[in-house]
Image (tube, rainbow, N blue to C red; front, side, top):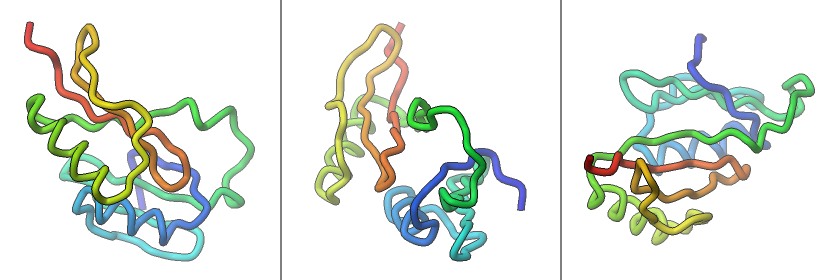
Length: 119
């Protein structure tokens, strides 16, 4: 199955459950070594068991950007995920171009939730 983005994970099934719970993603494929979840109409996220992937450069340098409409949306998602026990790496902050926070999934991949700052 074609995917748009693939993350190396310890357990594809556990990671799929995380993404389904946090984003309302729909499972498209689930196996012990690979899972695909439909994040939205435009993104299929693949979750491949780490041992199955060839050696690559440092994969922890990547971030999965998640657009949310408005500062209120960013704050609401931050609060909801904190209540659910998601690890918050950076509290909501205003940067030059965005209002954003960063968290991590169970495998340590960074998820950056953002909305553009008003010009």
